[in-house]
Structures are given as C-alpha cells and as structure tokens.
Image (cartoon, rainbow, N blue to C red):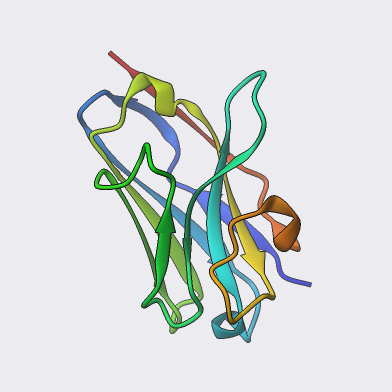
Amino acid sequence: QVQLVESGGGMVQAGGSLRLSCAASERNFVDYTMGWFCQAPGTEREIVAAISFHGTTTYYLASVKDRFTISRDNAKNMVYLRMNSPKPEDTAVYYCAASRAKWKVARLQDEYEYWGQGTQVTVSL
C-alpha cells in the first residue's frame, strides 16, 4: 500500500509561482509512474502531468505545458509540480497519484492505483 501526502498548496497570484510536493511511503518508489491530477468544482478530475519511473519521460496537459514542470527525486521518494505563471483557471484541488504501470507514462485515472488526499490551489488575479 502506497501512501501519498501532498503539500505546498495555497493561494497564489496569477503570474506567480508555486511548488507542490508529494511524499510517498513506498520503499520501491522507483517502480511507479507518478502523476499530478486536478479537479475544479463541477468538473472531472484530469491529469495535469505525469513522469516515468526514471524521470526521463514526462507528459503534460496542453494547457499547462511550458508553465508547469513535474520532477521526481527517487532518493527521497518525492515528486514535485512546479507551477509557474499560474492562471485563475488553474484553481483546483491537486492530487498526487502513483501507477504500477511502470513502463508507460500513464495518463488515465484508472491507471493509477494510489492517491493522495489532495491540496487546494487557488490562483487570484
């Protein structure tokens, strides 16, 4: 059982910067693809970014590409989401997730077995 704990959410002004962190309890963290999802009120949860187990392959939602950066530190069992130039439409609860589909950069919710509790990000003008 993988436990994931997000931190770093809060309020940020549009155009600012915020970094979300996710700590994983799993000793074999390197065996998991990791992803960040977001869910705004009244919308479906969708993937924001994902990173392969070795950290060399990434995927981004088109609307955040070139603004957000996902990274991981396998030695520390951590995954991060750097949010640069956030926009009010990025306001959502952000979830960290882990997928045992190690050999692909999973993009679908159903491919992720473990989820954090979520952290709220609010972007103001």
